[in-house]
Image (cartoon, rainbow, N blue to C red; front, side, top):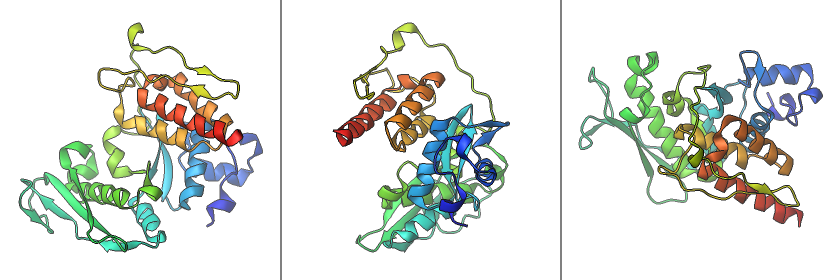
Length: 280
């Protein structure tokens, strides 16, 4: 199925056909009967167009975790993107370790491995690009992580390696296994009020409607309290196709309290300058 024919052309639900509405719902953009914010929908459509992945085949989909939206790809979708690049030359076998020194290609221990590693070959590179995934960092404690810990952490290592080898194609895209630790879907967000001193001054818009965001340093560089979801907002900002979508993302970020994160503000300002230069 062609995603170009099946998916809506934009995030305006009033312009969608019944088939397009069904495809959007199947893509995970409807949570408990509520459609995702338009900025998320627009970012999802942009990712589908950029990657050519099929949401019906679950190669790419949206998911709501702790009240915040993110876009994820399956490991098969990531492999497909790598193959379509024309430079994918295979991978090394997955290897696991219990101590970081001895690695094995077959994990038979009843206990979970401490880490997994995978190397991805590119036709234009001399050596494979390796990535290591630590089990403790990704273990979500769910049924699959308990039943198949080696398989799950191996997928995380593979996704890390694929993204390292093909940053242009996979930048900002994360797999289900990587994001499992972010929390179960449909879990209600619990927002804690922030101290007044921690909230930066509101950014101002220039004559072209572009936000000039001042970067405010925090103690840990992240004021959202959920570093794992910061990338989802950054992806939405980068996926904005025009200034209107960019402003929609910003308004949605403000409503969720994510606009105070210095990385989000910095990327927002950078993206705004790009649109401003294009309009000049």
